Amino acid sequence: MGKTLRIGIITAYLAEDWHSQQLVAAAKAYGDAVVIRPEQLAASLTRDGVALLTRGLTLDSMDGFVLARGFGERGNADFLVPVYQILERTGTVLVNSINAVLTAIDKFESSYRLQQAGLPTPNVAVVQDAGMGRQVLRAWGRAVAKPLFGSLGLGIELLEDTAPGRAVLPVLLERFGAVYLQEYISRPERDIRAFVVGDRVEASMYRRAAPGSWVTNIHQGGEAEACELDPATQRLAVAAAQAIGLDYTGVDLLEGPEGPVVIEVNGNPLWRGLLQATGRNMADAILAWVVQRILTTTRKGGERHAEATPQR
Ligand SMILES: Nc1ncnc2c1ncn2[C@@H]1O[C@H](COP(=O)(O)OP(=O)(O)O)[C@@H](O)[C@H]1O
Ligand SMILES: [Mg+2]
Image 1: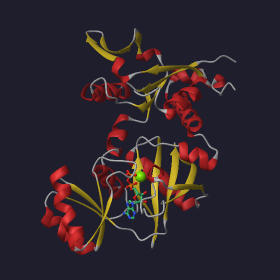
Image 2: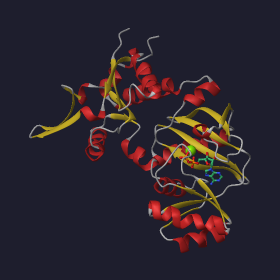
Image 3: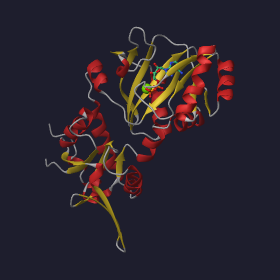
Image 4: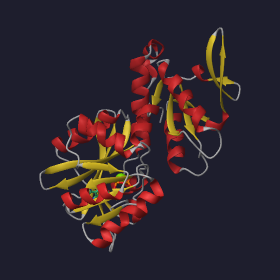
């Protein structure tokens, strides 16, 4: 059996990012893995149409793409966004979808989509002045303030409706212009990370906060332990991924008093901690999903069906 698929792995951080390396290795099992650096992308518009290029190759010579780290220090993000959108618009498989990634990095937009999809997620308020922020604190008693664009548990603060809690509001407003507040969910000293690929939860774990901390992110010293989720929680995680439009994602859930709630859906999820806890490398699952999508969405792919099994 020949190695037939040619999959582009788009990453600004091949040398630095273990995840990108894992995706490249997993793609090689299906054929060629072409590493594409975002800063080496170019576009040409002529009477013949639009062509997206990288180092002498046109992107339509490839069967599908993993958008691993689509934006780096070099290149121009304002140019790259429409490049990725054009790539997708022509029917090419791009995992994750650029629009889904853009939604996921925006906490307000993500919460809006979850709420509109009717999924259990905490109440959210975004305010641009301290007076409205104080009203929210008074109504809720406790709120979690998060940067509108942030991850890894950075910049997250628990605000009480007390003088010191209220005093944080003008500081955050001065810095960010707007404050995203989420109702605090009483929960055990852990949360759930469910890694969704395609239409299923591939692996999941509990994360426990480090001593003296209340956030559970691995990046903040949280400890991971593999767990098995009940079918309803698994369906909730998959529905959350689909509400944002992500093919693969880490969904954060809290075990609230009325059942599981989704607090966040990550567009660029890490899985090193998950691999350590569960022994499952999500790169394999992601590439299997990419290949499945290539084979089911293109006629070209249909002819290749028999050969597209990992060559290992
Ligand atoms: N509404 C909330 N109630 C209780 N704990 C929360 C809430 N929101 C976040 N946390 C804690 O903070 C952590 C980080 O929050 P999250 O929204 O996932 O932001 P980040 O993008 O920084 O990971 C969560 O994993 C959880 O432990
Ligand atoms: Mg999180």
